[in-house]
Length: 200
Ligand code: FE
Image (cartoon, rainbow, N blue to C red; front, top):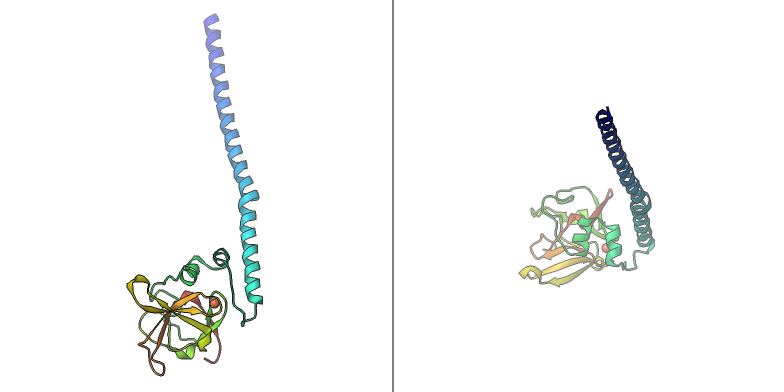
């Protein structure tokens, strides 16, 4: 009788032990979920909204500047308002892939503005088929819209084209374009935004 009672007590103890482990696991799961929710509500979400608000403030500041004034932002501020692809080309003088960009084969009429600051740069009436896979123009809307600088990077001697208002990289200019200028402004689509019009 005594032995049977002991076995019964042990079995009961084992069941209680399993229940305890199960409860502990439940507690652990609840704690992890609670911590995750806390992180989302108190850290991640406010940071994302804060970043958006800061980006909106910077964009509004740039938009409010007269077109005759230069745009000067820090790299951190540019990073907030540009996409990673735009930042790489506009602010780090990168190059996008040929034929896999927005405007190389675009024939809409309009004004191409700087994607970083909105400065009006090139008209579609000077865009031509260069077969390079990048949008190409034979002249800017006005010479003071752009800056042309010597570029000796990558073991090549080229002339870099930048936006005169914000200093962003647009592309390069070469001496093999069509008449009347015989220049080829070879630009990155990601550096530009087309504002469609009936003219140009
Ligand atoms: Fe610009």
